[in-house]
Length: 489
Image 1 (cartoon, helix red, strand yellow):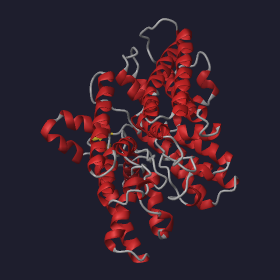
Image 2 (cartoon, helix red, strand yellow):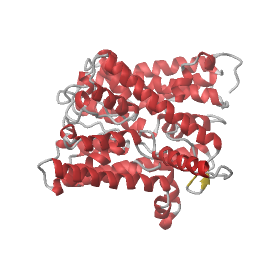
Image 3 (cartoon, one colour):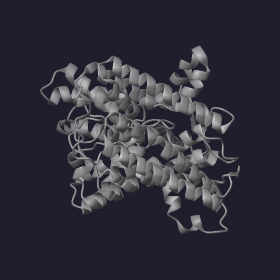
Image 4 (cartoon, helix red, strand yellow):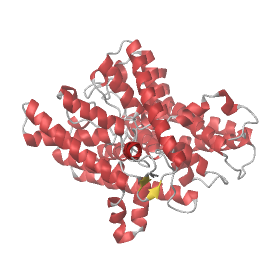
């Protein structure tokens, strides 16, 4: 393990987070929030000191290789470090206790958007902006932003992207890794600006438009209002949110290729199997929920379509915005929502969940196994978008499915052990592992995670961290042999 390389990158990360904290500090000064401004200042200074300490360990700057093991270590430890730094403003300002501060920070950076704040109204505007900003930073990925804005750190930096990637394969759209990161980040910024302008034109003020754009494109779901999109009660605003949530659920690498293709770029998006399946699932589930609500509840078909379209988009994209109390919906509709929370969006997007590409591949695998049973001598392959999937990739997908489901069950068991009802526990487990946010019951549409007992809150934190880093990056860090000298990866 090359600790010099790890310390060098962690130092740069700490300095970067310190610089980012200047933005909410300026917002705090603008709104006259002295206590919040002081909290951000001292948190930024703490991050700078930590960065300086890492730089002292690493010595003079140099372009060193980043092998696989170091890439995993930097990603896992880096995310943990940024999470701890990001909790400091809540803690230093006296707005939240230590565990709540950590949980809010994890929730923001993981894109879960499950708030541990009982009431947002007394919170300073700068702190609410910081929550939204953590959603945005974590959405595309800390490592992607780091590599886009800072010079490339030698060879092997692809190992950093692989450790943070959301999906079974990590693809690059441009030959150079840093160019690839800059292209992804550029698309991310363009979508965010377009979303903010759209919200503003639909009636939001500048502050609300910027905050909700940050959390929409990140599919994070933090809102500056206690009742989320209930607050606006606007079909136009909800329509804009639906469009950008579905847009952000597609692979950002796909959008990079589409933009580079020019006028014919829309074909790249339309011909992408994973995104088409995602949209098909969205349309089908929206229709099913609309019919169920209109039949079982005393609402018009038009209103049922409106609330169903928004909530299915919100939960399938794992954004977690709320426009209706879906805890009161019929059991079938809630079952559909739970399915969407588990599935999530596309690989390479800001959405969480199991990922549609894994779902499609596993369906094809089952189909092949059935065919193999009938025709034992046949040789069958699985492909996505015309690309043949290797046996290693197929193994990784099935392995991920098994571990993902098992962890959902284990976390639900821990929550039940802590006194949470079974349905509530299952929804919280699926929601936190999938980076969704809202669930049912204690963490439902009109509730916050502030009601969770301390042990359950700690379990939720770990589940969010595992879910965002695709499980195995974190689990690798917890194995003693990972840190043992002389082990080759």
